[in-house]
Length: 158
Figure 1 (cartoon, one colour):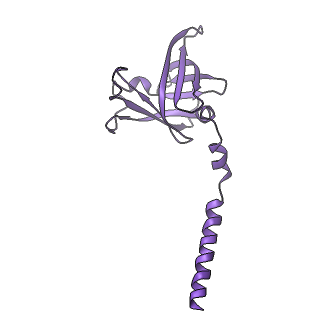
Figure 2: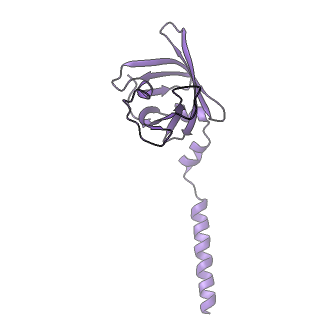
């Protein structure tokens, strides 16, 4: 009888655990279905950190990363605007993310719509909580890099 009671307890604990694990938050399942582009366009992003190839935190004022710091607004129509942390204009133009979410491309344009430059970066993290991409100061040396970390912000686009 004692053995049956233990088996019954284990069975119900296992069943309860299975039920709890199978339940999911609708918001989580919805965001998992978003494409990489939809994730990037879902919020405004603020640069909140930088890490070098040795895993060390780098000050956002460091010359290697300072040009990548600010607020970014990726719109669903494929355009973007970026601002420095003091809200001064930085960049504008067009953007895209590869279907597999591995790269982001921006085409910076001047006020007349003329292309200034194109930048393609490797995405290392793209979730609803973090967007991180990698830059290489010297394109010939991929051993030295900086990961530019962004997190969602409620900062209103200037």
